[in-house]
Length: 480
Image (cartoon, rainbow, N blue to C red):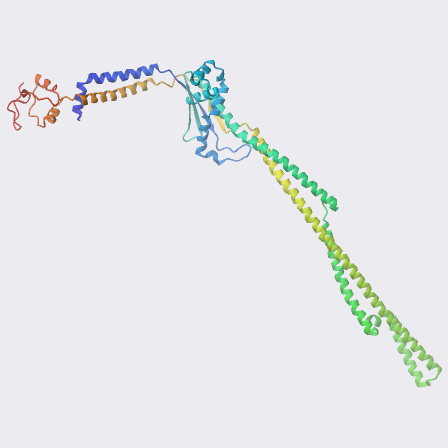
């Protein structure tokens, strides 16, 4: 279909098109003026995602995620917030609303939930694209009620976010409080066991008992080593005293033995001199021999005495060594016992320290969660509260009228084309040529041409339209 044919169809059926167009336009205008006026009140909320938490002192990375703002939108649109709005505005006291609820649900379900769902249908929450702002809009027929509900939704949202933050914190605080009591009891029990252990074993809290015992053990060990050296030397001297007592150093160096040896040598020299001068039976010689024999006897006696003193000294050294060895073994046993006691006490002390550290950690968390459970501040702030709108936001009469005109025009064209499809007529020369399959040789003006436009497609064309002797190569002469 060409534009010429389309215009011809519209000219032919302009009454039908105008009727459809004005019907649609009138309907749109009627709807625009019959619809009740709706007033929209909007409030703006700023969500702070950069400031650190006042209790924890840190910025949570989840606040900067895009899903966080979507979560806040879902919270505002939730039933919990809507029920808070219903309670804040005392809508349950409205007799007319209760009657409407009775008629709509026959008294089934909750009246508060029904009112909350009714408010949610007129609520619109939109986050800003490039900022941390939320716009809460409520629409109703009463401008004052719209502003009140929008502000109530904002306040209920802030209260709900505080509850969502305080609620888990209170649960955590209760858990940590119970856990702190258990750990405190564990600390007291561990400290009691440590005190009883120290009291039963005579251990002072600040006593370095093991170090003292170790020092004493080292001292006894050194004494034993020295006594073993002395004992080895005394044993050698005793063996030498038994074999050659006169060659013993103690005997040789003894002054009495030295004097006796000198005296014996002098008396022997005197005896030899007297032997050369006197005979064997001379009384002086006999007396001199007796004197030498007496000196030798004293010499042997003194040597034996000194040898016995070496043996006695060796025995004393052995006794001292045995005594020190026994003391060393006893001290070693004592040190081992002290070390065992110290290890057991260290285990008890570590148990006390572990319990104390666990208790301190839980108390730190308890103090933090207690502060969080008492914190009613949120990161949401009302930037612009909703105010009573001066003009209605809907219906938009101009827009409805323009839409009615557009729809009316489109519908009018569609109806005309549909009518044309069911009742086709020849309206242009192209229709004639297409219907007959022959080219147009001429065009008659006047009354015949106007009657030609009324010929229906498919009907025979009168001979006066084409002419009796029309030729494809030679057009017929047109009459004025």
